[in-house]
Length: 81
Figure 1 (cartoon, rainbow, N blue to C red):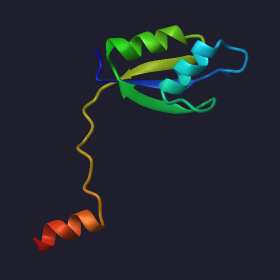
Figure 2 (figure 1 turned 60 degrees about the vertical axis):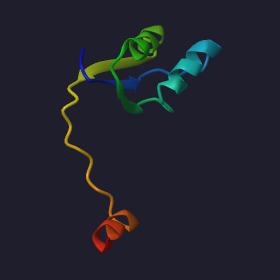
Figure 3 (figure 1 turned 60 degrees about the horizontal axis):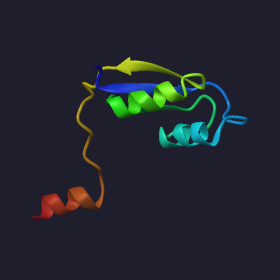
């Protein structure tokens, strides 16, 4: 399995079941065209499969660079100590 899934909402949730609307929201999708990257595991695969008529998805390699350090209070505390 890939490290992450890139899921995009392609159709409106208007007129769908309450369960489908909840699943789309649980995936983090808010509007048509919105894309999120979620971890690739059996639970999220099942959620995507349940609403596959509303979304598209693709596998993404998870070899992203480590997040950069935030600037501000966090870095100032480290340098002064």
